[in-house]
Length: 200
Ligand SMILES: C[S@@+](CC[C@H](N)C(=O)[O-])C[C@H]1O[C@@H](n2cnc3c(N)ncnc32)[C@H](O)[C@@H]1O
Image (tube, rainbow, N blue to C red; front, top):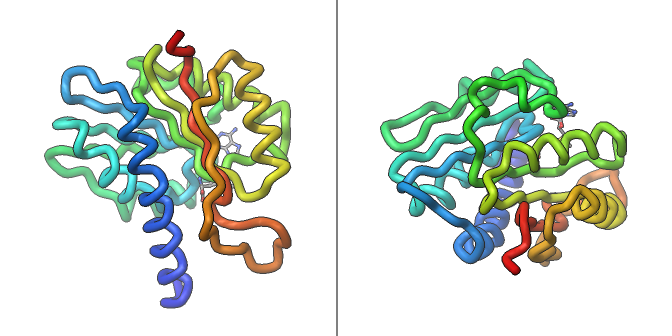
């Protein structure tokens, strides 16, 4: 990776952390000092470090699982993100529409993150992915999505609500970096948080 790209990547992640920190603080529910986080459709899982930084204050024992169907990207993630005594990383090659088949996810997760979810690339597949994600979320858990562009984001938000989740908030990233050669797309342009069930 060239140094300019790494600089952009780090700036994107710093901004994502800035936006996520207060949202997580407000909405996470922790039981027993243990947090299970599923990073769904994680690709190279560049955000693994900031997930650890944002979630570590809530967990003596933090378990972060990444799932994707691109083995090469998962290998990059595996070589980069190593477990330590407080945080374990597990990267799994699996179809995200069938999370119920993954033994490591038999226990429900406190938070599911889908950075740059890809509804536009196949609405039916992504509806199945969202459904599968909600199915692996604990009753008090939170689902976080980010999106590259407006229309895709609002369609994804609608699809997730139709599956029974409650939209808590959706935030427009004020300094989202434009994606080169993709007009109207930018990195983590929108972030939305859902609860599996309403608090009422
Ligand atoms: C737009 S990329 C986002 C990757 C990463 N989260 C990021 O922000 O850079 C969408 C990801 O969804 C993954 N994906 C698509 N369909 C999938 C499926 N059925 N199961 C698991 N991952 C899937 C792709 O391999 C890809 O890594």
